[in-house]
Length: 366
Image (cartoon, rainbow, N blue to C red; front, top):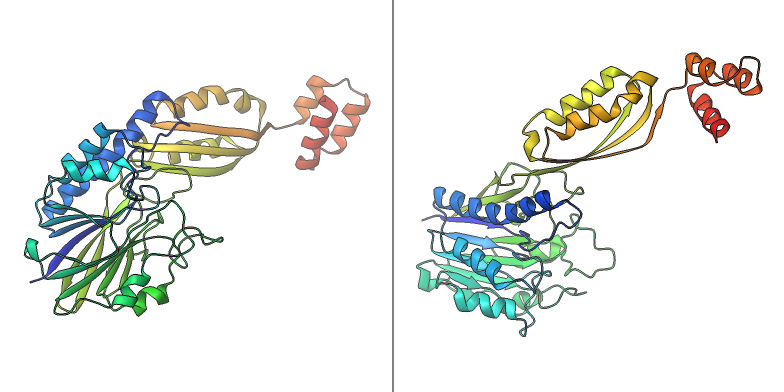
């Protein structure tokens, strides 16, 4: 009998999104709950046995009880045998915070908090599986939490052995100072579990749609949370059948954060921006446009109307156009400067060097 696993992490329930207006902020906050519910529904469709959250289910340890209960109610809708929840570095379990005490108090028997460095056997769930968790007990740590597994070895007479850890993964996470439970791939591979389910980095690993017989998986975030995240939200569906492992990416996110640079100097460039903004579910896009270049006077003066049109069709739009200037032409020089004056003559000599002309014009205007 194969084991079907839905692997996610870094959901970050409780993120505030304070850089956005009220309407956008509330929808982004709610999107994280919707993402969790969608994943539970998808895992039920796939008839998964285990639903794994590899850390940072919550964004902090001071989450209000209403949100914790909402999360537990969603997790209890899982139809499989067990939901496994690992404390991450954002929602770490130091043994004294109220988050996990309340979480456990209101959870059903199906939900298991992996907050101890010990094997968790799933015999009571009719699963021949040993789970080896590497939970976070503080926000930062210069040491990861997997060494106890190497020291103790694996439980005997279990068909499947699964490690679940949270921390920076070599080659995937930027952790220059080594403060985020850094793990090398060699360390993980030296522990002979069937597979590792990792959380922390918001980018999936491997970065493929399907893969066979890989040992290490980092789920990434299921719902994008900022401009530095370039992908769709996703999770992994993993099926373990004897010695074979098959993994498939599941797209889970609703919103996309897009940070895009455009250099423009014509009406056609503006039309290309409009096409880019409005294609593929613009109502789910949070876009920042960084515009540079120069436009003729008429196009430059019509930018306000152009921006309003773009804003009307997307979920959220921010435009940075400090480097977008009005294009200086002979007509501009004729209109603004007296024929024969120094500025007039000087600027006309630069008419074939657009960059120098722009700089000179701005200096003279100042």
